[in-house]
Length: 266
Image (cartoon, rainbow, N blue to C red; front, side, top):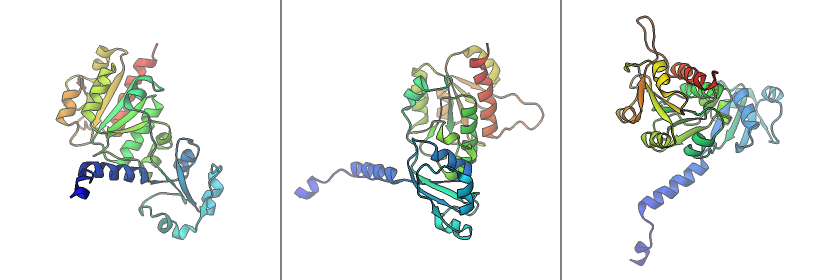
């Protein structure tokens, strides 16, 4: 009986296991550009570098790592990448990046007072492209739920073209709560949806130069109801012609450009 009484509650055991699993989690980054940027990032914990001789010759500085040189014909088996991965004979095993809290990055982080929030955007190629646009237009962070969103993967990193190493990508527990946090920090939250009546430009006119969080949903289902309710405004990107649907990464690039221009124009 005494042994059972001293046993930790199931929820505590589950939390400890999840924490250990998270600490043990690793991902494979692949492709010369993604690997080169990860090697140059002092914040990235690097574990294993697998390359062909040709890739090693092209890679350059390996940041003090001891590369494992393998034959191109067995590279996929050695690393265990998906068969459609365009790895260029180069893969780096790493741990996910750790960033500061949402409030710290949003309020005092580098870049414009601009944040992008993603609601159930699960395609790593879309998220990678959005990270790249966010970096180009000076956003402080891209945030997404820890569940039902694209995690750090090699495919995401390759599409991000190096931005994953520099652009904060924060996985948060609850999107609506994170948006409320941003609102308390002075941000105006604008949800992008084709069903909105007001175009983005007119909504931005009402907001002025206050900090802004742009919220984009997955293609098809769009923003969830709770997300819509949490937004201060809903806006659309005007279009001409019968076909009025944009890929989410394209919509992000356009809205980021329009919003960043408010902060940088004289």
